[in-house]
Image (cartoon, rainbow, N blue to C red):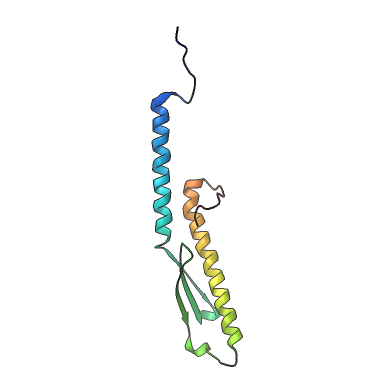
Length: 114
């Protein structure tokens, strides 16, 4: 008399589960690729510095209003650029986390979304 093995419901449902996992992985990869095409925009200093960054945290644009260029106050411009870049990185990471949370169910999984 043959004994039945108990498991996850047989070969058919296990195969179906693996197909679903593979589909989810493909969708996650596509979403990560799309993040590279999406951008966030940040302005600081009343709009004198504008930064555009992709969802992969790649800096695309830095615009500086020429009226803010003061050779006697380079530190102020440097501070504005640092603030703008940091804010753009934060927004870009938030956007990536938001997009990937659809796949992770809100779990913080290192490496996903970045």
